[in-house]
Image (cartoon, each protein chain N blue to C red):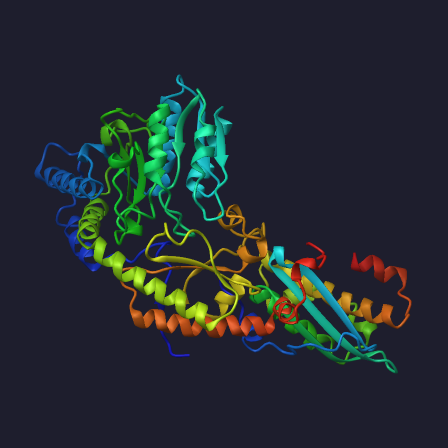
Length: 139
Length: 406
């Protein structure tokens, strides 16, 4: 299967690979997927509590090239955004940017879930309420 | 990385040996006749060439040339053997026994037979990929007409004990078919010696051309017949109609002749190269597992799982230079990994982490060494990216995590 140039670029030079301290109060961790399904994505954010802005993001992914590119792109996009902005990122934006074929759409879904998971974890850690609409949106 | 293209996917298809190509060439233009044209020299030359090739192929298997039916490939041969026996022997019974690790050409033919009113038993295999002989024998019943077990597995290279399987079938008076696509031309395959009555194989896995295969059908003790699946001019003793692919068959014959002469030395050289690959990779990297039995295995194949790395992603790190294939099915809509590896009892995670290396006649030691370097670098790159490798390194039991499955 031929990958798009953007997938190849992110795959060869993944951005923001790494690990943040999950015990830090300002860090939210999203871990999605399962080894049995061939994809596991861990996306972490570090939030500035004063501005609710994502100041750093890191990922590690077990998966195919598209899964790695999707998570790499996700970290690039959310850095500098507020968590309210980041939570609105839709998987189809990732599909479009990376020109993912239909069989790889699940990779983008996983990236969206990982962002939302990291934000949810950060909010829970800090006792921030999540409004009902967003909960529905993550299902 | 140095620009090199290395082909380690010979179980998918082999390059056509240049000696085979040379033998085929005159049969495209100069001797273009139809082997069924009995009334002029063009036809006679073609028929003679086909007869000669049939002898060459039969000689490789140590069978009579009348027992070779040319087809378009192993898939057609598998279909013809299974459906042909099912139809021909319907008065005797409707039960077929096969295994879960067969090629899709066998499994999907069996599914079709089930739709046609047949009953099929799919045997599990043991952890090493071998069939449990006691289980096979226990599965035979009065309505059983055929047992179909592949000679060597395409993904793992595991070779079944065909002699023991043949004895069981003989004891119970059941026909035995074998898909020997991966074995013929690479290891000695003599169906008569082991009691195999139908044997499917193809040219393009043994350095012959694509688009031509054969089915061996035993003519003596017992005389086996299959119902034709293609209607037409009654070629190939009425079992397979259709104008013969003369250049393809000529090439198949030559490939069989070369294989017969060079098999022993090829196998010896390739098993050394395969071992070199395995030893180097397992020396360079932790947590590398060999899938399937290592004693009863094709000399040129190894199937390795690189734990905590996803196979397709791994391949992407080196697939500009090295051709292999993965048991991860990330490209398929089902997202299910190789059913063959799952049948061996591998967890889905290890199945997703698997790569099949199949060496061939044109693989050199330099190729193997280059591949080792590239694959080692690829695995290290992917492990640096892998959250579950990190967990493993921190001593977290990955299996203890409750994953949200998708």
